[in-house]
Image (cartoon, rainbow, N blue to C red; front, side, top):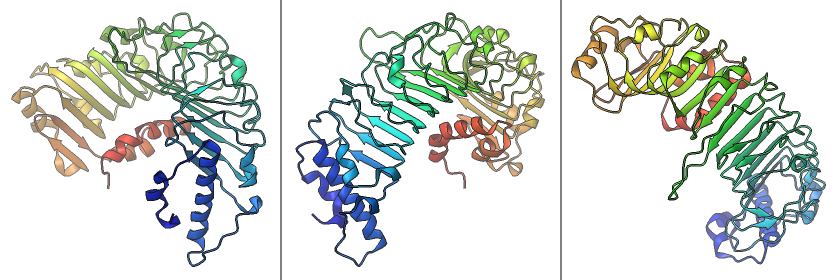
Length: 426
């Protein structure tokens, strides 16, 4: 094959097992790296592992038809594993992971395992410097606490598209340094009372259940009433999605909460009366109508909501939001009182109204005549589907304008990056 056209030829080759495939990937990657540094050299010496340094290694083994037990002892013969900080393994066939699979990977800080697995032993205890762990497409419904033994420095733990459905008592109790826990597109429907024990340093908690389309599937109803939350004093960012919540009072346990995302959990507007979130800056939600925001929301700057009805007394509903400067609403229908005023719009840096149904023309004209000055906006839209202006660009707003602590700002911007990348802001 031609190393310069490796990406086009690699799928024409056949491999007997994971080790052979991985060796091929590593050798060709090393050769490509050397080719970039020395384009006119045609003979490369890869015989000394100490000189073969790779800080980031991704082995994409999705082309393999079968994978036996994961074995990586041979890797130290190809590269200096003391210089390896990030490792990603992608595969589609189940394999086993033995206890000493990652023995010697003392410098590893980020590990991503993308694919199903079986017969998994406690392979993490050799990774004492690991800071980020992602498990994707694993089929385990629950994890025992000792599975996470030996990870004193882990800060990020992410489950994606896994079979995790039952979060047991003390599941994460050994992860004393954990700051970010994300459970995305999983089947979670049981939270035991002390399932979040030990997470005293948690800053962000994200639970998003899997969207299921099988016949007879019901959206899970996750009950937080019986979950002990008293230790989550440092929680600043909570994101819950795609399940039912019977009551919302548990949120009041998080007195330092700065960002709250409940967009895909529909709430009755009365539920907001029971919230006490005096430090909240960013709120994403779904409701039957625009809620009345009580005095505890006095620090709220940004609202991103989906409501069935734009209420005719909306000025009164926002009367306690003295710092509101970002408002984005998706609306099914509108009510308009011609006598109503909307002074809050004048203080907004960013304003979006998305109409799921075409609103009355008098509603559109009302806003256009009173509150829209295109020459004062960076971006401006006005039609039957959307009314919007941006006095500053939205990306800049979240990166620099909204008053968030640095760790929450970073997480919120990261979460929104996909959205920003779809829209040009230059």
